[in-house]
Length: 249
Image 1 (spheres, helix red, strand yellow):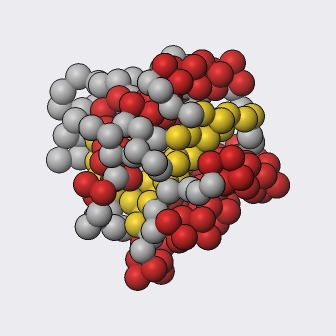
Image 2 (cartoon, one colour):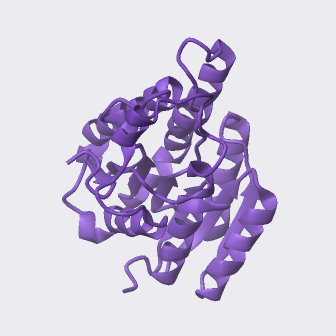
């Protein structure tokens, strides 16, 4: 399939995990790409993998909590490629902590990256996406749909992403923009690996987050993102799609 031939995609959080898998998937389907992340080594590797698929690729270090950096990268993307068709907001951080121990600064940091960063990227990309009648795919989470133990900051941030997604879909749907979200769960990435659990967690509570099947790699989420961003998703707007192996079924 070459669903993105002649189209340009902007992917955040592209250095690893779902961001890398999405970039490579879009590259394999013909997209030109502008990739951003803070992890420059991983970002360069993702760019290399995309070029192996024959894609034209630009990449740059960018902090998604910095509006000036975001706007500069969106502008650089449009100046290089002449257009912007797809925005994939995948950059994010996770913090699991007992509610009575999380600090206000920690809570704010998660919201700044996951929610405010997504807001700023959507706002910066909006005029270019309206010009191409393009698509936004945001990354929410199953934690936006059901309580995640120890995830007060993370779940709140992703709930906000879901609400923002629906708002943009309604406000700009008549102008040709589509905005959808994916809700991953039980996905094997570095962010979901060792070191994120709080001290002395109740594992019976954590069992609520387990899928009915074994965890999958980030490519299963990338496949859904690609569908939503392509013309195959032309009549899907304001939707959230769980990619969680039946966790919340």
